[in-house]
Length: 231
Image (cartoon, rainbow, N blue to C red; front, top):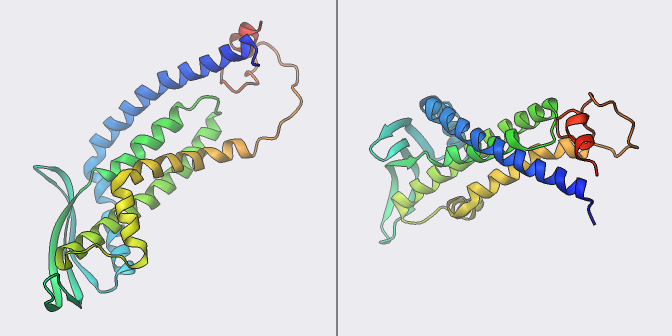
């Protein structure tokens, strides 16, 4: 059974987390809104490369990040240089497809991951910076895969009326469109946070002065945290 002082410390951490989370989320939302034209455009060369790598028969004629009445979109024109049979059983020897994909999914990952890392209690500044760096790399990787898979399957549905199934595309496509992006965001958050805890080895508590950082990891001085709340 937890002591009253320990419960009080937990409540302080929870309140601190919630108080930090709201402005962190709003700040990230404002940042993405301001940088939106550049954030999406920086991924375009990566999408071009990945489409060519995953589907060598797909020639990317054009791929742009632009605004529309529905919001920001990835607009693409892709030439399919392979024979196929459509839903009516007609044989074709390649086709050029046009389409647009709403870019809303590329904002999901940073909007979930970074406010959580910024608001998470009990982390030293150095640990928080390391976690953010890990998260940035993971967000770039998963964002590039997310849109690339959706474009490939969008092209497949356009000219053949079916979703691509080779290489697990079908599963990943439906996964991303049914809460997969939010789930992967939480996984990225946990992976980025894990090194901050896995490397910590329990040690025998040492005496601290009232002005040193509190051993509980709250970031407050000892006199303003556990010493103040001790029973």
